[in-house]
Structure formats: C-alpha cells, structure tokens
Image (cartoon, rainbow, N blue to C red; front, side, top):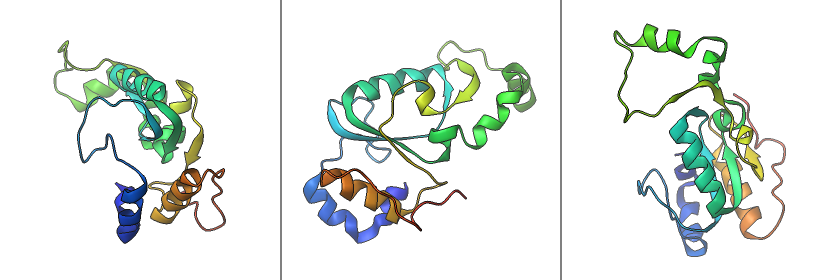
Length: 152
C-alpha cells in the first residue's frame, strides 16, 4: 500500500505501466509481466506456491519491505514450535483441509526464489519506491541513495 503514498506521481506512472495484479484489484492469477513487487514473508504452503508462480511470470522481481527481505516480525516465531504457537492463539487448533498448511518457520522470499532487487523498510518510503520504479522503467540499475532507505 506504500505505493499509493507516491501520491500524484502515480498519474504519469499510469501512462507508462499497466497494473496487472494488486491488493486493490484482488486478481488471483496474473500473466507474464515485466516487473513484480512482492511483500510479506512466507508463512504457509500457499504463500510458497503463489510466490513460485509469480516468479515464473515476472522478468524482474522486487522484494518489498522487511518481511519479504528477512521475514520481519512474523519470523520471531521461528524459535518456537508452530503447533505451540497455534495452540496459544486458538482454543482449538484449526484442522480444516482448506486452510493453507503453516510452515514450521517464516521464510524471506529469497529462501525460495531468486529476487532481482530488494526495497528495505517497514514500510519502504514512497520516495524509495518511486526511485526504484523510475530507474527500472528507464532501464537503469536502481540506485537508492542516502535518505531513501529506512530500516525502522
């Protein structure tokens, strides 16, 4: 959602790119695309399946945010048993075959697929997103200079 923080800069961007899949459109399937942004760590088997398919479709894949890059806050459960975590959250541990199978640990994106660029931050700043986007669209290697990267 930090993409929307680029504010009015999104208007000229819309003349250059076509958004295919986003949380705003809720499109579940996507076709081949030039650039994909992915956020969040991998917490369950469905996350891994979706990520692998997305990687196959993207020429360039960008990991966006701390959770995608290093697992973020959800990775704090990695030193605990996943069954114990579920038992402490739910009165009865969910056991529905339609629920995605939780992974024993939360993984960053690059544990499963190759990523081309990382955009750190929680969330990354709109200016950092803009700089990365404009560099990639212009065919330049993204360079996030001083002040654009935040690790908070």
